[in-house]
Length: 411
Image 1 (tube, one colour):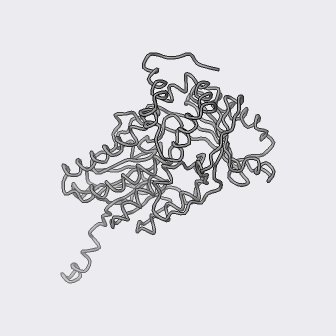
Image 2: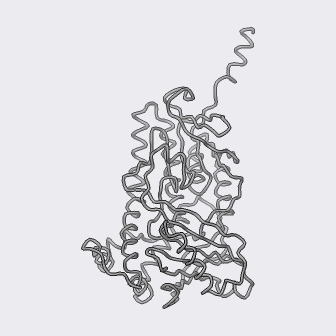
């Protein structure tokens, strides 16, 4: 080969290196990809499924979720919620109302697709139908210390200066990072098409039922001609959880309607000391075990941690050595723990209280205006559970009682 031909072919022999590769195109991954792309970096978003795809999720968007969306994002709302009916294992039902919208309801396939499109408009490139088998930060696949190798199931290797793992609660990237989980819950859900007369009864209102199993609850979220009906409880009670869903649907008078989709999903919460990074790899959303322990609400945690991960991945991509990359990764962890970590810690304490005294919580939220007002402010995003407990004496006393030992469970 002539030297002229060799020079002409040389650029093709240099492997392409992306600034940031994001694994998983759910809300966390799409947010990370958007944040990194907006910063002007070359971003590749990998997703194993073809989009849009179904995800077991109630689809309720609270204030913090809406606040974390990309600028100009048009929510594909199926309904706006102004009223909540609370019940205690099917009994003592009471409906509370708000003049302002509490939260919006979306279908995840549409919502996730729009988030991905926002990332693409910001400059991210999307590849679907791609399964990541592992990531490597040392070894023959890695050309230098500033590079991470993302190895796909077909043997292809994608190179990046930084990687964000947003590949769900059974995350392979999370396994690489060493994410540790200590609370696993089983959610069961049915999408139930209903006639217009039934749909009209539910319009603008959701139901939250504090369930018969410790820490369990059920929900009905209306989405036009379909009701999303689900329950969640600690893993290990699969048969009882399934029975709760069946009884719940029966009590609601919905047993005669055939679900269009029935699904299940495990949610996993991180331990307080669980890592959020390893080298040039960050994790966010479900892959990091980031969700609210009491309600198991994950969308706002995915959006917020995803945006942070995208922003810090840009800094890691720019890091010239391992020391600088480590410093940026620690800054990401600090940002997550100072915000979402504080909220998760309080959520764990409230879950413990709820497991012991669900009747007390139900009585407070349905009978005490301050408790209802606190609920409204939390779901609208003007405050957080941690802030409520920190500033409200009654809430602080209730949660502090946990430190003095368990109370008696209420039926």
